[in-house]
Structure formats: C-alpha cells, structure tokens
Length: 78
Image (cartoon, rainbow, N blue to C red; front, side, top):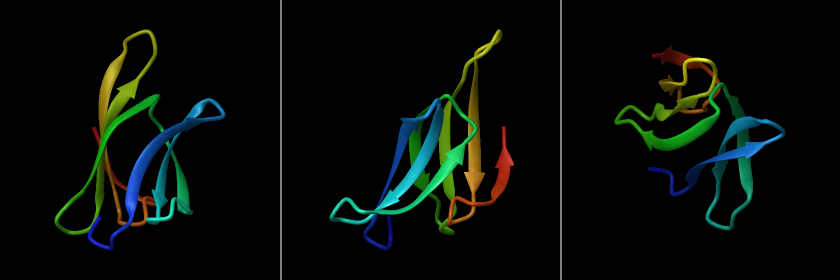
C-alpha cells in the first residue's frame, strides 16, 4: 500500500476477512467481507480497495467489491 502497510485476505470463523497489517505483522484493522474466497486485493489510485473473489452456493459466482480506504464502507459490488 502507499502507506507501507499490507492488505491480506484470510478465512476465519467461516467467513472471509480483509486485514490491514503493518510491516511487523501487527493487525491494524480487520473487516468482514461477504465472499467465500478473496483471490486478489489492490489499492486503487484514489486509495480505495478493490477485491475479487468467489461466492459459493447453488450457482457459484465471482464477485468484485470496491470499498473506501478503510475497508469499512462498500462503494459498489458486482
């Protein structure tokens, strides 16, 4: 990330989570993400976060979600 920290997706307690960690591996924040698997996370030019993943169900589907820079507020989901 531009601020020198890292974003990682992880699975915990039957849900996907997005973590922001510092260079020492300390968790800065953790957000629940409505996806079964997060495959990729990038920081967009404006600081927002874009992640792609998969949602399992009768009709497995791909999903792309864009949040604000804090990962707290979903700007759009497709």
